[in-house]
Image 1 (cartoon, protein in one colour):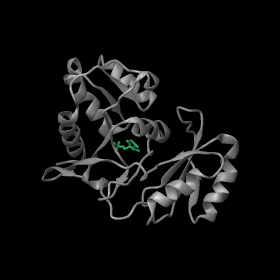
Image 2: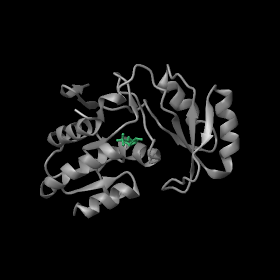
Image 3: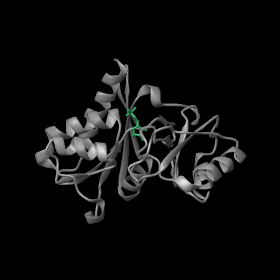
Amino acid sequence: MTQDEQKRAAAQAAIQHIPAGSIVGVGTGSTANYFIDELARIRHKIEGAVASSEATAQRLGGHGIEVVDLNSVDILPVYIDGSDEITEHLHMIKGGGGALTREKIVAAVAKRFICIADQSKLVKILGKFPLPVEVIPMARSYVAREIIRLGGQPMLRQGFTTDNGNMILDVYGMQILNPVELETTLNQITGVVTNGLFARRGADLLLLGTDNGVRTMV
Ligand code: ABF
């Protein structure tokens, strides 16, 4: 299977985890886009969706799926999203698409986080993929200096502004042996909105598209 076929297969497998009549949290990126296309087929069975980005909201709307404000939702049974890297402990790096903060908010509210990914995303140690950190613009240089003190090499994502009006520092050169600790440490730097480590709240289930079909990992 090609990488795109693996993404689509994982997205298709996620459909059976959507409770009837529910509001569904929906992530961002190419794998999430496959999921949105699959969700459109069962749109009459769900009440609506919460989007983790403007791009996802647009795609959902284009398929006739009602986009619901997270603040008006009491229960979000499930959040479906992709990942840039994921370990067998279901810790992740996310945010390559720049939507990490909204993704983390929707993930926090959801009862279950189901990650959908192709097999290239499964890694032993996080950090080869540069770790995105969303920062308030005026804190950019300060946060970059603090990240260097922690051993990372931050690079400003040029020409990019998040949906929240902030900037992204992509951090290279980190071998992340303790993702829970690093997630906390980075979030404590003043000016950081959030970072792309999803370890304190990782995925509950991984549907991994592989050459041999979709592998389920918990
Ligand atoms: C989102 O989409 C992000 O957190 C992650 O950066 C990206 C994964 O992209 P893709 O599905 O296109 O590989 O989930």
